Image 1 (cartoon, rainbow, N blue to C red):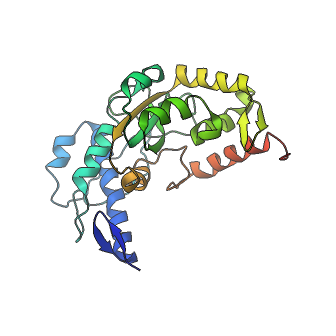
Image 2: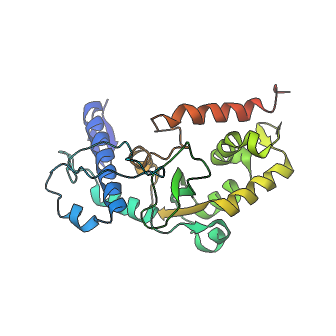
Image 3: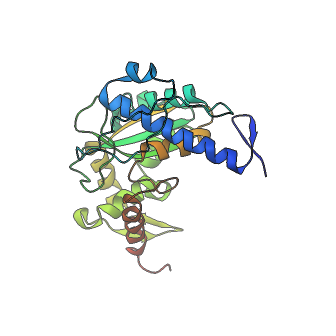
Length: 254
């Protein structure tokens, strides 16, 4: 059955081609950003393979696909749109106490960043310009300001990121959980996790009218280690295990 993608009706094979090219495109873009060579890569949009490796926060080459940069496919993949999303998404991480004054009440994508020493076994891509930051999570929002400030920085019941962090830090921080209609942190530990996130993490974002259209491609291209949906790689099982530990820590459901 054909489905629409950016206004075009594509069958399953065609969608797979578009999906593959989108991941290649983003991977090449991030390789360029990490090396400070955007102009060079943009000038090489003739279809030659881009072979400069990305660098993750462990200082090693990240595992990303090699492919022709700028190849559009016969349906014309929205390369400029993906370029703009990636460029803006990684541009300016801010402190969490700046979210309420700087984040827009608009739809878009957001990216969370952490020093590599915080989660040393989950090394995401190094930030291209800010030292000692690596990518850990990417998500979407219908309203960026409220999603970041009211969910991710306040309530574990409405934040997959908070639940994942709590699961990863369960032993180190001694977080306690309880049942409501779901598993949440006890009030004192909600506050402790918020304090930890405020002192440790940074966040960036980009506005996008339909973020769901590009979210999967961005996640597959950037490979943030704390994501599960649209993710792959060695970190995936670690994150699934951490989330399960978080849920199990509250005991049987009443």
